[in-house]
Image (cartoon, rainbow, N blue to C red; front, top):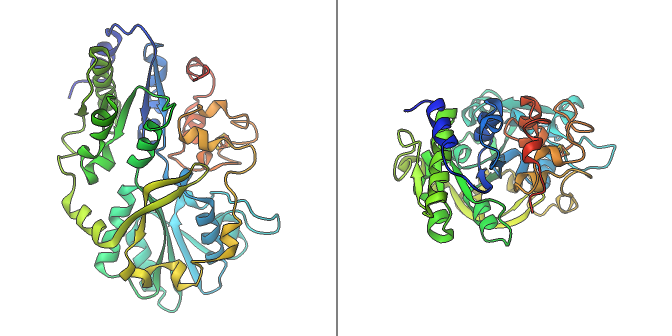
Length: 372
Ligand code: SF4
């Protein structure tokens, strides 16, 4: 593959006469863009917009709240990916507002790095109930489906908060102000679901799109592709991650997901319900559902859960309507050490990535003009 320098020179040579806004749909892409300082070396007319690519950021508050309530049960071990532990929920002052606070108060909350670890912990603690708070996109749901297919220990259940990525992009494209002119699609999701999943962007909306991997070379190649398409008045899906994201994706993963989950309408934190954007366990797997097992499916307590913390603009950050540094709390009340909203908690959250990479003054400000 050509070097990042090559693609940068190609991009700089393009005769861009007006602003073009390119959205990425992946926290991994945003991290590479920010850590490599790509915004600072690209022509001013190119805006790179972080989009809805952080599963922790969009995990509904009521799911976080349910996880905390389950963790507080004495017989329960609650396991979750590490960045879910610090996600705050809106609760009365006397209650723990995150899994981390529940753990500090004595709850048995354990971070894990893969779904398999949940099975191991359940087998090692057969006298207790283990709940796996499984929040993530297609790339997380595929290994969760494999865990179920392998046979879950009887004391393990799932609090599922899985989401599909493309419906959020479809929702934006069907809105009056999508806010972007081209799309860089996530390479890892394409590896599972197939790059074709993003074909609707050029086919239905006439918008240039390219699938990218997770280094500066691949991202710049994808960026060059969508800029060329834009200049030439064409729109197609270019796969710039073809050595990994193969046509049709991963059929085994798709088969496991189909036998484990059904796709339903789902709530995205701060955004609302997006049609057919969530994974739910198939009815025959109800025994694996933590909400069913603990009688919390119709829990009135969950319904009083709110949305984003007061003053937090995460929903608009997730939708690419504002940049992280346009939130009034960014870097002031809200930092990784003291996060107010989920976008500052997760390694895939745009606010945390911008803060950690130093993208909060020069460079970022150059792109932070009023968007609409
Ligand atoms: S800076 Fe903090 S409060 Fe503001 S949008 Fe980001 S996470 Fe939310």
